[in-house]
Length: 128
Image (cartoon, rainbow, N blue to C red):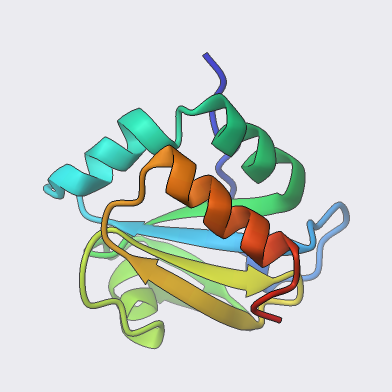
């Protein structure tokens, strides 16, 4: 079974070689049932996995964690990252351009077909 190549937040917020044109942050909580459903259904779907792995830097952030993450020139916790991007529910997925510029977000469970549509809309430049 194919899986998403999850990377660290530095892939979005620092200049690194091989950086992709777009990025996502998947904000989740360990207790969140819909987050687990996205893992089981959406992030295991072959089409979704293919699009994410080819065109996106994909980052998972436990929004209730105090683990440190890179955010541009500083380090922040998952809780602080949640505040920065005004995450108000789980799961939340934020979309970014390759330079870390915020584009848009989605809140709640998104199934594989709808998520594929959203990814293609981002790739088309609709939110740029």
